[in-house]
Image (cartoon, rainbow, N blue to C red; front, side, top):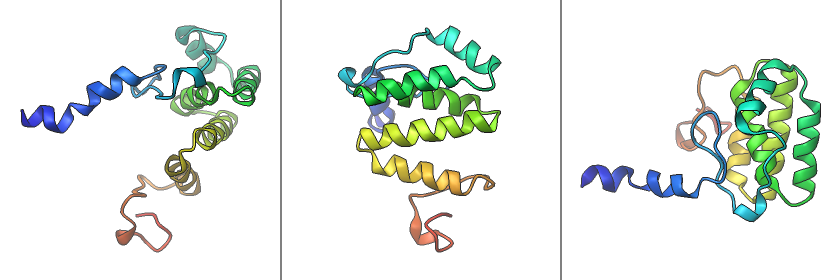
Length: 139
């Protein structure tokens, strides 16, 4: 019972996942705010691994965002973030994640992203415990 009390929320969140992402968390957005990308996940990930500059996919996510589907930008941003690799992919990931978080009214996640981007050289960030921080909100 203690386990279910502590970790049971995960199954509730799992049921709310709108689209899967490589790290296993997926994205949780209202279904009406997500439009799938033109490629299925397997083909999308293969292409992202092979292409250094997936500009057309990013343009597709930007169009979806402008059309009121921030979940699409969130999905591609998380896909690009997980793959990493090139500076271009990282820039696209940061742009799409920030825009999606803004459109979805998720200021805390925007703040976490901003802190991470400001401190890329740190081994880990803890933006939740400011009282232990080094003065700039990061420990």
